[in-house]
Every structure is written in C-alpha cells, then in structure tokens.
Length: 220
Image (cartoon, rainbow, N blue to C red; front, side):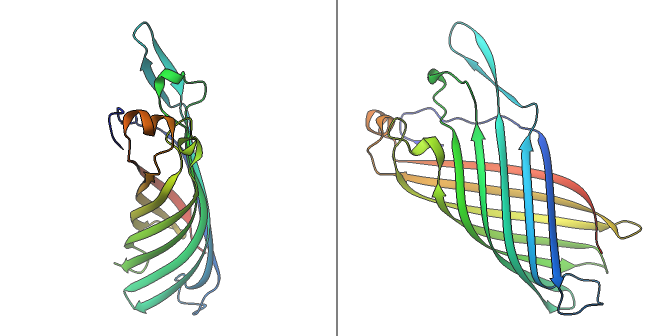
C-alpha cells in the first residue's frame, strides 16, 4: 500500500515450496524429549509456477512471479514451566518479490528486503508431543531492493515486523505434522528524492505478506 496518488499493488496468491530445519545440539536436559538450550535454524521458501496478469490497454500479458526468502538464525530455548517454553533468537535473512521482464508501465518495483532480526516465540504444551505456539519478530532492514532507487521512490527509513502462529500434532515413529502461519509487514518512509515520490507525493509504503505451510517432520 502506498500513501499518495500511486495505485497500490494488491498482489496475487503465490504457490511454492518450503524447507525448514532446526537443531538444538546442547539441550539443558538431555533425556526429557524436548528442545532446549542453544539452537540453530535455517529456512528457505521459493515460488513455483506463479504468475500475475497485466493489462496495458491493448493486450493482457502474464508475467512470472519470482518470490522467495531465506533465513538463518541462532536461538536459546528455555522451559519456563512444564507446559510453557520460550525461544529467543537473532537471525539474518532476505525476502524478495521480483517480476522479471515486466514492462515499465506495470509500475511495480522489485523488492528484496535484507534484514537482521530479533524474535521471541512462546510454545504451550498440550500433550507430551503436541503444542501450539505464537511469536513476534522485529526486522532491521539493511536493503530493500529497487524500490529505494531514485528512479522509483528513493531512499528512506525502513523497518519490518512479523507475527507467527503454529501447531504440532504428533504422529507415530517420532514423526509430526507442523502447521504454520506467518505475517510480515515492511514499512518505508521516503525522504522525498525519488522520481515517483516527487511526481506523485508518495510519503510511505507498506508491503505485507501472509504465508501458510503444512510440514511433516521427524524429531530425534
């Protein structure tokens, strides 16, 4: 969403794949079956077969969406009580939304948000291996991609927030089903020196995404 006379890009649903993993090699309790202590995580998402339509007044064309992200983090997880665990961590990641070969008339700049983040996540144990969780993340942005070029909106002050929820359902043989819902929002307040910022009076932009996934994993 853009504050000014420029039309907002509402986005389209995108499908793809996701790979995630986490390891806690030094648990505070070695035989309680739970994750604890210092941990490391990595996640990767990539769109596949997603397109967006653009009508230039003469023809309607389809353009491929290249959307993806990665994140690597270090954590510390601690049990506050028998039913509650808290996980705090820092991470480095990148979230991008690119539309290659789109015409200039489309007026949707490529975004590549590179960030350092701090997050906290709370898990509530329902049974021995079933749980629900909620978390929040703040992202300090290092780069935002083409949107900050003076040919588009120009430089500005940027930050990001994220919220997540998840559930874990146990399966036989240490397998589990993990469902996740993630919301991220990046905000940029422009300095007023970009071409579109000056022409259309755009003061800030808000870029939000919602991702959902259902994973099958193994715990050992």
